[in-house]
Length: 211
Image (cartoon, rainbow, N blue to C red):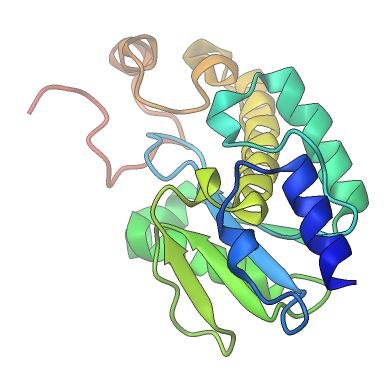
């Protein structure tokens, strides 16, 4: 079994070094955790946790930012179908304003882990150090490029938050949320100057470039 797992991971996602380190005879349920929306000016922060099946790994996983929207949607559907478990958690802009974005991101990731349908034996987290869980965890800088499980989580989180922002664009069409997903592009900031803030904007963030 161990050789099958390693061969499956190496053949389909050979560029990810982290999972190659593990003793697969001891550890099978590895959860990757990643977030999206941390730096946005509007909308929620969203985290995903994914436990891939190492013997049924999805081909083509990479950092979600390197993929087109269509590629992300296709991969997300495949990951959700073939993973051993996955979950999503989001915290609203009001919650972000109340507890600060760093704490909101941490809580969001913890909720995603706690919402998994089965308990992971190890958690791999992109960048952030997770505390408050009874499961061993490792923080990896640029983890979505190092771990296939984190890469999968980055895709799931991005797809779900993008869908949310696309729906928000229909409610607040003047801001173009479907294009920039709430991030601080020049076009988004111009819309804030013209129309002011909407209920989805984060009041704890500097929304305009001016001091």
